[in-house]
Length: 485
Image (cartoon, rainbow, N blue to C red; front, side, top):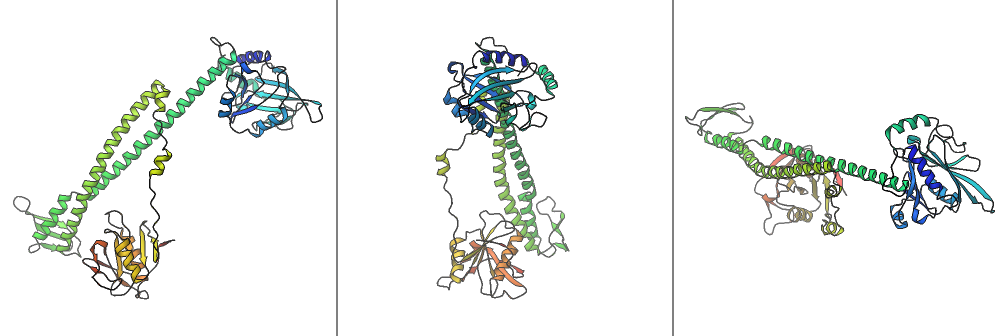
């Protein structure tokens, strides 16, 4: 606050406050107090020691407004209330050349004897503070903890030593407040700082909203890039199918050397010979099946990823348009329009309408978590095996069992059609070996397949299944997964 403005306000207060009694104390923020001196139509005394804008003047508010805006009193606020409650204001002065305002008050002690105290508002920028002094001028309470001589508890109060430099610097940054259009300078100061508060609120909200929106756009663009990479990694579906068909068509006349195979390309005019690479340990039939498998995955990926990419394009277009509107609103400084961009909180009714899935309870089964995050279920008895395989498992879940040995059915839960990582398959296979009669063997063959390829023969014993298709992996028995309670 400019010193000229502060001087004028102190002169106004000197016409109203002396002889008044200190009543209720409100704390509006971590740096501001409001004191009721019973002025009624003139309002309440407002003191702020916020370093960026220390100030003092009268404000007109209703007690209901103050109560609603108040925060719990700090230890300093409680000290003011306890020490000065009911005290009479004797005088109000401002130090010559300094932004230090002193309130001299008198209150009776427990024996009825009058005691003098002082409330000092030090409105000096970074060193702004509020002090409660005893009759000898010693500091008994301070709002902010500051370093410097005459600023510590139990010391004789002295204004900051750098006051002159601070005053000169601040005098260049601010101008006196004019009270044209206002009955009092306090009213003008209140209007001035309330406008500043609204502008600061606008700037803070605008910065936050723009940052949040840009973060959403960046997140979607990153997802878009990753999806495009995934789409590229799957390759051209028709290309995989074409190679698979050529492998089958050339089984009788293919020329093979290790992993290199020369084929007749019947899909190209003139049917030239081409060379491709396959797994050197795979037959042409197996290599063709692998190509058809990649074709199926790539075709599904093109469909699923294509749909998601279209959704992202639409979402990004909407977000970009929203950002342009937001930036326009900020440029026009339209607070009402800016408020419309704030996210609307979810209502309690909407939150409660979402049904929470009950946790899965599986008596008679062991539960694990694989290194890749997949849930793994292990049956205990033959009846538990039937339960976990035919009642709990879904069609795309992976089923594992020790080959040629009685043992537990192991299920790897897979809510999507994605391939289960090989590491998870090995870990689940180790469990299937561990909970079988081959658990003491150094190596155990484990059959695995999708649950949809299993059937149960009519009238068969518990735990017995029939597999229409399966693969085999050899592992060492082990229980190396995180057990889920």
